[in-house]
Length: 202
Image 1 (tube, one colour):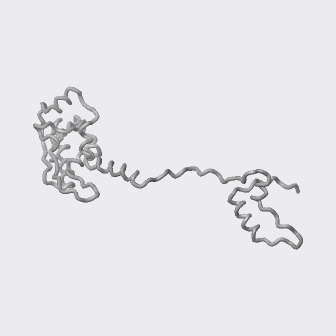
Image 2 (cartoon, one colour):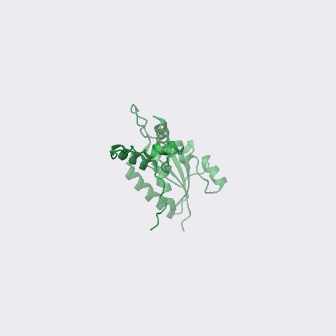
Image 3 (cartoon, one colour):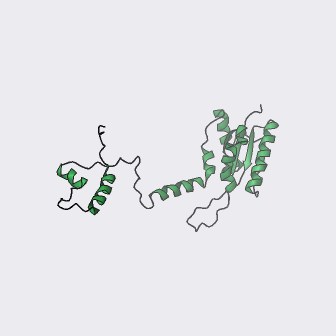
């Protein structure tokens, strides 16, 4: 039976073999055999290294990642600002008139004083009823929210209804009937209210 070609040991395997070889006692009259590491050094060869890791751990500095996360958290506290620069999904001239407060809303709803759950339900019912009756432009009043003392390290969100409105309008079931939404002109409530332009009923 012919002897096959053996692969070269990895560095961790060679280290393990050296530890075992050091504990062995040579037979009487025999010299202590060289370890694999000593042989490789005498031959001018480098022991084989283990495979390169498939990924490298990025250098971490205290505060480097937490700063970015805290900044995004602060931005998310005012999600209502996302609606201030919306993607245009309606006629540009009509959108300009609406933004300038020259278009009169066909209906309005005031969510002041409601809980988040009650406001969401009332808004959903109101918008579907408005679309069914043929109304296109409605005004949703959320209020700007109360600004309280912020003494803690975690930013607190003010104006919960105002910041929740973009999410409600962008998700089912309201996303299917809302064509455009943007912050209202000062004459209709400014940052405490929003124009919602509804799609035509199918």
